[in-house]
Length: 296
Image 1 (tube, rainbow, N blue to C red):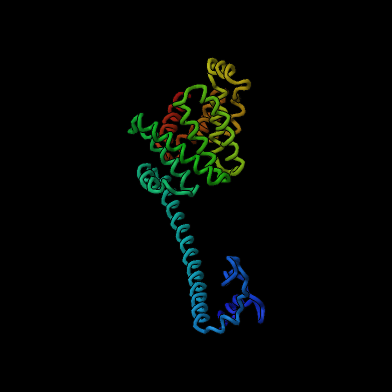
Image 2: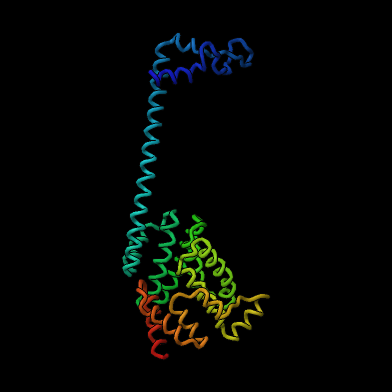
């Protein structure tokens, strides 16, 4: 009865109120359209028409309500599925299962979820770093990783991880683009690392990578510095002291070595050597830290 009352008010717009007026062609009207009032009383005058209209409206209403419930359930289910995939991906990453992680995430290349996309970029990059990956395949993976990192950033500019992995992937691509592009990209890389740190000041990895950026330009060879000055009015630059404000892993130890502080260098190199290795690159850092410790 409540539904019928609501539909009645919708159809009649109140007792005695005129309904919508529709232009109708009148006989003998010389092709001109007249106007004829369409009232609720005319609907009531034809009980069959009214019943069919009421039934159709009721079914439409129920159908719309059902559609809303199903749509909401689908969204909840999709969200739950993404969360499950992310948990699996993070577990595989922490376990150092690079190949399994790659196989999992490549199933979702068409995803529009930023969290999935930046993890896919990371997985592609980690696979490129494997020693058994050929140089040709590595290049393809590096460029593909950049595309997914870019998509992740487009989907969610508030994601610190998207900024971080976009910067990392741009840096990787620079190895194939030549010195001019590499130096030009340095400004973009720094911008996104700084944005990642701004969005998440507690992310040690972003801070560490910003330290690498500073260390790299503090140690830039003279000939590269000269090229940079020719190509750019104000080329990127930094100092070892600035790098020390960021470092938390192996490169921090190398910076202390440059500053002849062997005690602190040994402390940070030991931390780097004992840091859990998740990727092939982490293992390389561990090896380098061990070698530097031997030379102290």
